[in-house]
Length: 539
Image (tube, rainbow, N blue to C red; front, side, top):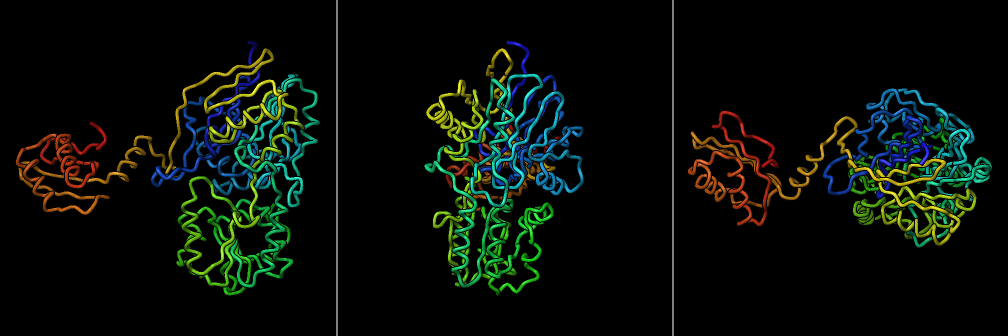
């Protein structure tokens, strides 16, 4: 094979929803497209987010952001810390979100629709797409004088009725790609497994919400993704028509709408929007609350638990969930819906009425993109493993013109040149785990947290010479502490047990025999010259 034009190395975003990291290598230049986080599952026990392990990356020259969702910008602090000289490109809305997230000004090159920019000898053409956040772009790029081109469309939909944003510019995409012989498409797989084949428009949601809100006498509480400025724009238009005010409640929704207003996405916003502190909450306004995913500390969760100082649910209240659950959040949302119902509110969700549409492409939109771009090679991205494989099958059935279809995993390399392309696999180093932006948790500690949560723990400290001991129990069933004390005295103290591992085995036998659990045992033997208070997972 000739010297490669590009090596594509997905560090994250495949086999999962989130943590989008696509590394491009060209002529010793490393370019990262997006740097997102992955939200943790229930068995991560208090971790805040996860990030693909990029620590083996020797250098990073450029970072190009497609849009401002957390699964595309959430890890930017870690990237800047690791590669302080990296040059960043992003659209305006994402730039403002990044600076707000970092809490400081940072140099970022702005791009907009059709504003061609060069990175070394790579030509980038941003293409406006539809999504659920403003300023979302697909990236069309190619090396100078090459007959290969690439279109990276990770998050997109095609909204033919888009009324609060520009439409997906398929005409421009066709125009800039028509001269190329070989075309590669990297395309969103999020909705490929849906029974729905035809996407719905944000305008349809606007009309439905308008009908619902006009027909309700009482307060209307709406929760949605705070980044969905199109949805908030719809509620603003309804407020104008119904002579109501829109009350922003929650830090996230306030931050996003403030930025959107500054950039012109929410015209007349200040005329109709109010802060919760400046209104009589008994009045029949439209209240937009953050927390549509049941987050513990979010505004709507406080309202549902009747602990909020401003909004107290009444029987005349209507609560609209203008969103869908992110996988893994279903239980928290169902619990919140039940609590709101018990307080007397009427609930409408996307299962009841058309109050939410996805920001990701369905099958007919994928096919429309295939037909407009006419790719020779298609690479499904942005989806769980099941979605990626199903997307490959759909391409074979609906678009036989594709000469190649690649089913990739994270760390699968596509090596492309004028002489062809090939796939190779690298060892996947896994994920990095974080409690916060500055606090990383090693993988072994995650295993420890899981064991503590599942098994409980006993902390035992004793002095053999004195025959004294103390213990503390955590996360265990009700224990007969007198029986436990007798066991420790008879089996550990009197037998002069000086090995913490031996004491651990005895304690586990006690708990297994009487309580059917095997807790983690942390032993400190005071009489040893050198403390043996060591990690309770080491043997």
